[in-house]
Image 1 (cartoon, rainbow, N blue to C red):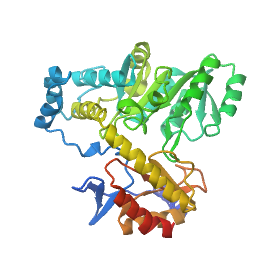
Image 2: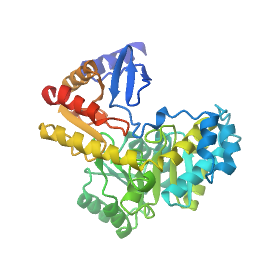
Image 3: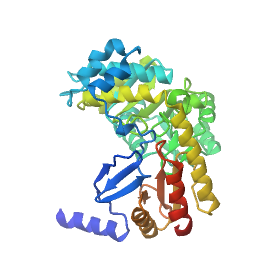
Image 4: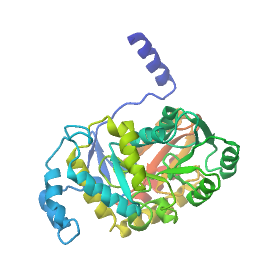
Amino acid sequence: MRETLQARLDTLAAQHRERRLLDWTPDPEPGYVRCGDRRLLDLASNDYLGLSRQRWTPDAAHEFLSGTDLQAHEHVVQDALTRFGAGAARLITGNHPVYGLLERELARLKGREAALVFNSGMAANSGVIPALVGRGDAVFSDELNHASIIDGVRLSRAETHVFPHRDLAALERQLAASRAPHKLIVTDALFSMDGTLAPLPELVALKKKYGAWLMVDEAHTGGVYGPGGAGLACAQGVGAEVDVLMGTLGKAYGSVGAYIAGDRLLVRYLLNAARTFIFTTGLPPANVAVSLLNVRRAQAMDAERARLHANAARFRAALAGAGLDLAGSETQVVPVVLGAEDLTLARAARLREQGYAAVAIRPPTVAPGSARVRFALSSVHRWDDLAGCLSGVLAPRL
């Protein structure tokens, strides 16, 4: 086995595709991280509202909950914050009462009847899709969907139709030709390597026209778009018309985990059919409590969302003005497409030398020939810091 694995690693290294881990620690100043002895502006994480830095001590939680509708449940939250292991699957004895508080909070935020928390976005997508469709059914998936969606589609064994990115005409042709009894359209809301947004109202219209179901992954839009950060579907006025809303808790919400929101019947069914929910130990109650507190806090962060969107627009405009390929980005995720993998790695390394942490994205995460440096902006970034990145590094270097 060793010889085979070494040969595979050698091939990856020759293609500039071998990945390695680096140690990162938060810097005391928001928006910055440390890698070894270097202090860098964090343009790599998905901490869009800076909530991963929030420390929920018992006193902080008490002060935050006082005077809110959650105050009556403070004892549940405080108990959960002290428990760092669930001990069992949720269907056995791992379902701490704080789960119910979080799920009701998420359902209310999304304007849906119910929600169900999963351990991760990967677990949600790879478990929910096979629970909904199988052999004889059909799935229609955007070509740039996240790997978790791709894996979920493969595991379902349904007939798979991949349509070109946001190509509604191509999708409609596929839907019109399908005779499958159950049709599922699945899309990211924000495509995390390109920074583009899905046309959700148009997808809702197509799913209605052809009797399909629609599942939307709001991993990168939850907390960032819509009223109170309710997400892109709510921002575009179709939150109640998407059959399956998926979101994560580890990006804008600064915690860990994911969830599905929808009709009560959907949640009841997934609780019985989604293998990645049934056959796994539950998240630690402490993490669930942090998710609850951060989801509630994020709803009042309209000023932070406005600052994030304004800075992202200025950042994109400056890069586009320098003639760089941004892959059509229209969000806080801004890629600079360079093409060659060795060039992209060199640019990311140069950025680190200049004090900026941005990630080199290479195949197979993106298509061959489209390697890129990916910037992810946060509301905690000051424009002066972003402008320094643009003027001191990007414009003359990339």
